[in-house]
Structure formats: C-alpha cells, structure tokens
Image (cartoon, rainbow, N blue to C red; front, top):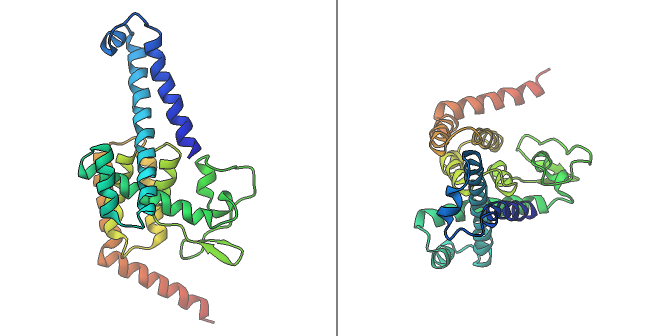
Length: 244
C-alpha cells in the first residue's frame, strides 16, 4: 500500500505546484491559461496519474470494507454508495477489484516473505528484489513454500499491477470482467497468463480494446474444443510418464 500512497502524494504535490506558481490567479482556469502547451500536457498527465492512484486506493478500501462486512456484498455496496455517491457500476467495479487485491495479499501473506510467494511481486517492485529467486510454480499454478503451496488467484497479475499503481481500477475492472466467464473451465495458469498479457497491453491500449481482447481470450479458453484439447494433452502427458 505504501507504493500507492506515495504515488498519490507525489502526484497531488506536482499538480498543486502549478497553482502555487501563480498566486495571483483567482481560478483554476486562469492558472492553466497561463501555462505553455508542454506544461498543460504535463498537468493533465499528472492528473491522470492522480486519478489512477485514487481509484486504486478506493478499490483497496472497498475490499477491506467487504472483509469487515463479513463478505456481505449488498451491505458493502450500499455503504460505499452512501459514502461516495458513485454509480452502481462504479461501486461494483471498485468492489470487484478490491476483492482480488485482498485475495492476492492474503495468499502472499500466507508465505514467510513476499518474494518467496511469487516472483511477480519482485518484478513489479513491491518487494525486495535482492533475495534469491522464488521457487517455480507447479502444475496447479501454485508456488511451493516448504511443504505448503501458496495458492495465488488467477487475477493476481491484475491485483499486483493495481497495488503498484500501474493499473487503474477502471482498466482492472475491464480485464476482470472480460476473463471472468472462463474461470469455471480454464486452467489457473492460463488465466494468470491471460491476465498478465492484458495488464502489459494496458499501457498501450484503451479499455475498449482490452475489453474486446479479453472477450476473445475468454472465448478461446472456455470453448469446448479448447477444453477438450487441454484435457487430451494432459492425459497424453501423464501416460507418457508411465510408458516403458
């Protein structure tokens, strides 16, 4: 969480500096009318960073509220709407994203240290990257820690990007909603890989593009042909292990 709070504080400070440079201005419009194009572009970019960090923190708080409400989503939804006056879609998105962040953090907290739980934490700069490499995942997509595996949810890449301040709650919600229909039929490792690919693509594409791409991936992962193919491949691999 320190990553998000620091990011939010820095962004707010940078945006506020623009006003401080023009103390004689009487309105925000007057302040920004005095800025050259490059400074105006910079201010808008900083506001975007601020908005992304704010949304991410709102999602994290929503997830914590759900935990304190003992998983009663309807109670939490009403609570958030009363506090933020946001639309139903916005509140549901915050709750969806906050839930996967909480689930991922709980899974990682089950390990002795962050970096032993999953190398993705180190890759995103959330944990210390100086320690030895984490153990590789097994066939179920889990990372062993001693005799106990760490079960990371399929949406862990999305949660990690949100915590690192790399992904807005809106974009995270698009990815989660797009891949969700495949959860019941797809392999955890495939879903994690799909989520990670969309997180990476989010730096260059719009939420609308991500939504279309997520739908395509979801269809591929959940289609009967794809499922049957993966089952057959798994069966053939297991047979190859026992054949002389």
